[in-house]
Image (cartoon, rainbow, N blue to C red; front, side, top):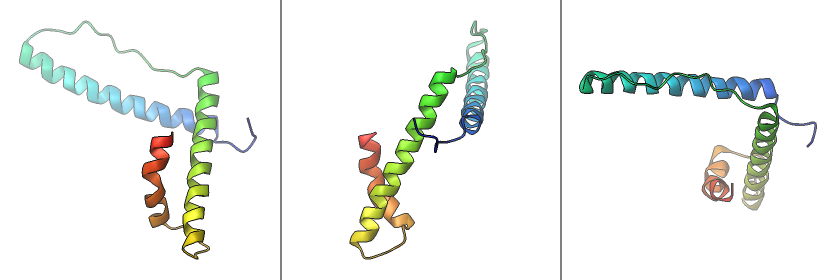
Amino acid sequence: MEENTFDPDLIRAIFNLVWKKRAAEREKNERTETVEMGVGTSKKNRLTSVNANALKLSCELLRLFVTEAIQRAATIAEAEGSNKIEATHLERILPQLLLDF
């Protein structure tokens, strides 16, 4: 893996934020279902964590994704005679990029 990658602490913080939001949504939905059904749930809320190797791999995958997006958008910009990548260039490459990843 290269040195130029995303900061693992930043990626971990993003993951934790997403996990907390989803847990809150799940808890809200479970409360609604419990009130409707009148029964308790046996699920316990567990903290979600990420393995150090999985975090490194996620950082590398994100780096590759962003690098590929920039390269494809630059190719489109160059074909149009522009020296600058604009949002429209990213919009044009995004569908195929998402399919490729």
